[in-house]
Every structure is written in C-alpha cells, then in structure tokens.
Length: 142
Image (tube, rainbow, N blue to C red; front, side, top):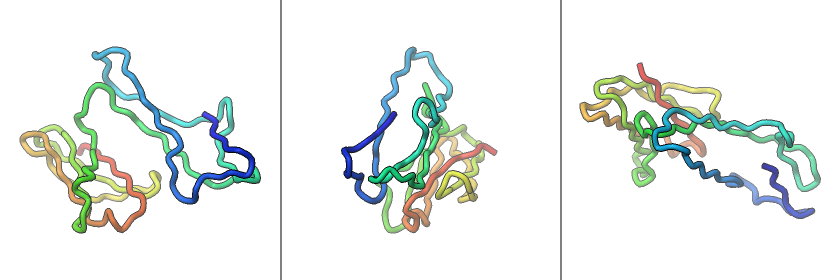
C-alpha cells in the first residue's frame, strides 16, 4: 500500500488511522493464525514529510486468529473508567495465564497472572491503563 497526499498537504499531527483491512476466510473449516506483516516490496517502508524528508515512525505487525475466539484477549471499552480498563478472554478452564503489557511492542512487563474460571472466563483489571497513551496486551499460557 502506498499512501500519498497532494503536494504540500499533510496528515494532522498525532495518531492517524490510515489503513483498515477486511479479511474474508475461504472456508468455515479454516482455523489457525494469519500473520500480517509490513514489507519493503514493491515500495520501501517509510514515512515522509510534506517536503519528502524521511520521518521516524512505527509499523506494527499482527497475528489474526482464524476460526476461533478462544484465547484472544479483548479490551472491553465499555469498562474503561476511573478505576482502570477491563480485559476479558476465553481461556481453558483452570489454566493459568500471564498477562503482559507494553507501550511499544518490544519491551513487555508482567501485569498479573490469573487462572481461568471453570467457564474458561479470564478477567483482568488494568488500573494503570489510563496513565498510558498507548498500551498493548498479550496473554501467555503458563
């Protein structure tokens, strides 16, 4: 994907959504993971200024779970309040999970370790969520 603007035009300062992908699964029986990554072919990966100077920027690769919602950590936006952010995940009943947080997808620290309820439900409250402009989460089975 190449995104450009008219000469002399720029995106507004701050975080901007510039691309949204919609993926369609070929078969209902398809399960597994789909890795989504940025590359340098056919266009080199970079961000340029209005004057074509190279600007610093981040590219975030992702993994999309296909065919199942189990073990996907979800942020419940309706639960972000003065207390913190509520996250939920469908896990394996009785399984322990280490919940990690990051602000840059490189450096991770342990938020907490939780055990899934008999129903498989995992619930976490991140009381520090509002103190960070960006916050990423991941869960690791123990």
